[in-house]
Image (cartoon, rainbow, N blue to C red; front, side):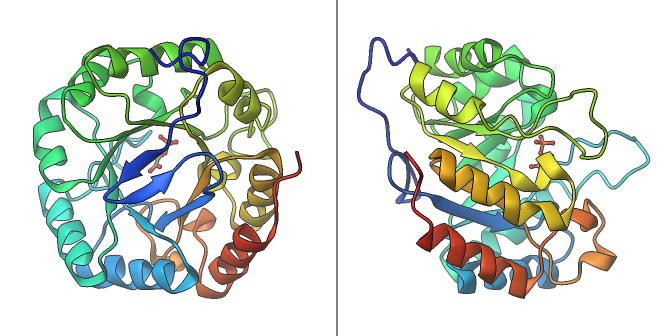
Length: 263
Ligand code: PEP
């Protein structure tokens, strides 16, 4: 279902009216985690002023340590909905449990499936039945084939509104948090008709890498990027070191607007 062999035209996925697909270079930005109404609105306003058209923000956070901030749950979803009301930005937020899909889908414009759940087949199937577009991150240890098969689980349930997101893979290299597999973008676009975006924030894990990795994503022809921003990264409850502040985001957005893909 997701293969390009049977569907040669590349797909445009619409999220609350915002297109992601060939020729779009959609900018998605927002906080890694929803913390407070002020922080989320502040991040959204920064994102929107820079030209982002979709707001990201995690209410359910899958953290490596069980002692780390796990997200606000439904209270976080309510904050996102309020910020959507205020800014008009459609929201992208993660769901980590098949049992929460209905709840998260009742607030979200696009469901995010994270790298740690990339082969959680019950969750993928539930997302496929949610009626909402799905952003599917590549598993950090997953091959491109496994990623596309995960998308197939969503598609099989009647949902072809799937956006693939390359977010870095585990390699021997530990100078970066993950290794951005930039070649995955053209490979996935060759094998599948689905849009492919890049997450330079979670791949590099460091603010100074976000701009260069975004340049690479644009150059290689990604259909969008998803970026962490925070009004005060030094106080962030999740992934502060990779969050951009206002000026950085504007620079990045300018680059996304002006740099043509090198094809
Ligand atoms: C995220 O985008 O909030 C996230 C946790 O990403 P990943 O699943 O890629 O680690």
